[in-house]
Image (cartoon, rainbow, N blue to C red; front, side, top):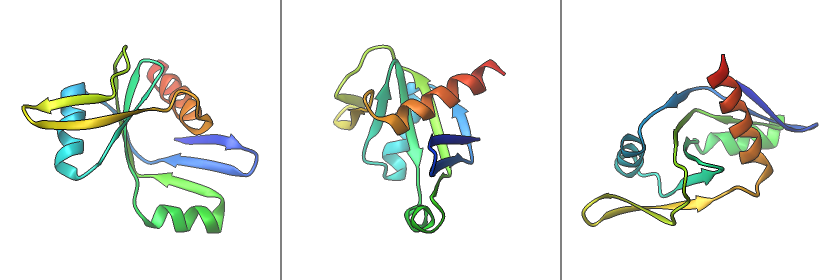
Length: 111
């Protein structure tokens, strides 16, 4: 799935899965992801490799290898995965790139 951010920038999403909030949080913490993202009632976890940043500089295209998402109606700064295991959640509702990603996710859900 490709997401257009601006005329000169494109985000390519190679994998997209809807999952439960608990599964996303557990996967993120065990995989070493240090935060999740919240936008307009959705929780997102992005898997991005370091080479993606080099690719973006060369080709004006940013590849994201995997996005997992879940409905998460109310924003919270911290999600408790298990007792004494928490992951921060960043509110990205005002960021263009995340607005575009969420729009693409909603379109993918429709069909």
